[in-house]
Length: 210
Image (cartoon, rainbow, N blue to C red):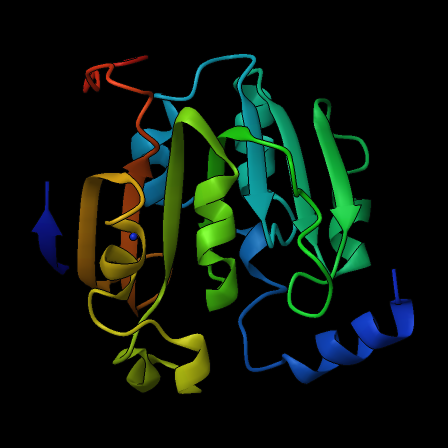
């Protein structure tokens, strides 16, 4: 693995959009173990924290934070995602079309927001706004160059180099940023970022919750 580091309802319509997004690797990611990138920062999210899992799939990260004692909101367009999370304590599932309907969490804030294997650029500023002061964004998805490994291949679903950093750097304090090729759970070229929303003039505690 090599990396570059820096220490960014209408059911019918929703069903149609779900079918039309087969290019995106959405259905299977919830069946995998949690992302190592998410695990790297998960310990910084304390019990009782409010967590939003965006495009949650089968809920691998909703389950992770539920096990940590967090209150988790999980959202996905796929109703099967909700069924898979129905018996998970501390998880509230919402079926919503994040690309064709208004942002369903307007006015709410979260202590952590998790996004993996999903890209819809108009959500970037909404995600930053939905972080509570001191809240953390953990984002990881595919980037340009992933085409040689498989789907997605459509540039609309692939981050450009430094795109996460350019999008979130002006809005949040970036803790970590990496781009490169990973081998597990399967070869992929990814971009990933962890950033926090500043809490007034308070100093950022790099060892928080460790």
